[in-house]
Length: 101
Ligand code: SF4
Ligand code: SF4
Image 1 (cartoon, rainbow, N blue to C red):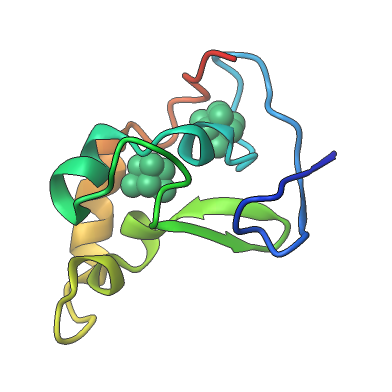
Image 2 (spheres, helix red, strand yellow):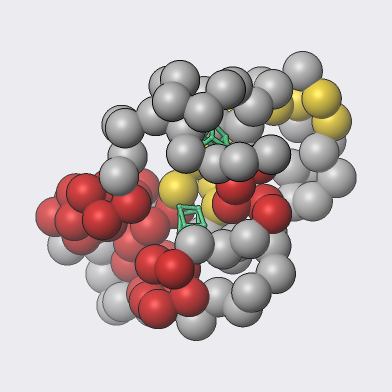
């Protein structure tokens, strides 16, 4: 475990696993640099942390997958589930860690 200093409010997060292992929500990739999806859909800049990073249960989560309406500035959350599924597919969620250290 290590202590991040960017937006985690002091939470301890898991250590980044090796490439190809399951994502454990360490947040390294999204804290380092917003992904192309974040740049395209929520106007994230090129420097991390991504504004859609969420922290809960001792790990990081993608806010676009969990609460898309919050970041897309939608008037309600009725489309969160379908949008979340679309973002999860676009981001390759579930395919393991693809971040290089
Ligand atoms: S993809 Fe890798 S670096 Fe990114 S949060 Fe998951 S484990 Fe961490
Ligand atoms: S949009 Fe999601 S996957 Fe992309 S950088 Fe932000 S939190 Fe990470």
